[in-house]
Amino acid sequence: MSLLRSKPIKYALYGLLAVFAFILIIEIVDEVRRSTLENKWRSELISSLTSIQSYDEAVDSISHLGVVLGDAEGSWVVIDYKDTHNEWIVSTAVARTKDGQFFQSPKHFCGRFSGYQSTKDSIAEFKKLIAEETDPDPLEFLKAALSAYEQDLVESNPPLNTLDKETDPDHQRELLIELGFEPIESPSTQP
Image (tube, rainbow, N blue to C red):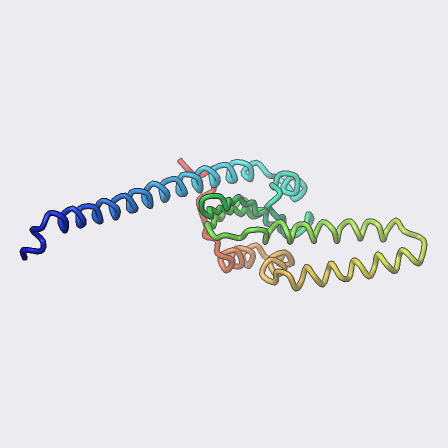
């Protein structure tokens, strides 16, 4: 016990305790900052998705990290997403179904949605070019490119592709949950 009464040992223990307390405080502050950022983003995403009335409005409203799944004539799901890789990784995704149900996820999806949306946009552009093309040589090239993009869409992200093709709203909600989303109250029902 005389070792613990030694001033150098006491000061070393106090110093070690101070370092642990400092690290703990930094971790708590970081967690509060991450949580605040997630909440801010979630609120912004919900706000931007609340007023959407149609598939076309959904396409126009998403950020460069979002995706619109489904089609204009049937059921659709819009997912918008924000993340940062600065000091730490923070992610927030909000999904809204055609019937106005909202879902959220803190999962880090990175470029998953935007990559899928980009491929969908390329497919739509190739279909448009094919419809306008009359020369057989470019037409064959365009059809081959379209086929490659369609194959990429299926293979690059099977869960999103399944959700994109799903027409049953109940099954769409199940697929969102499988992707890591959880239902939240619709903004119109929140206090």
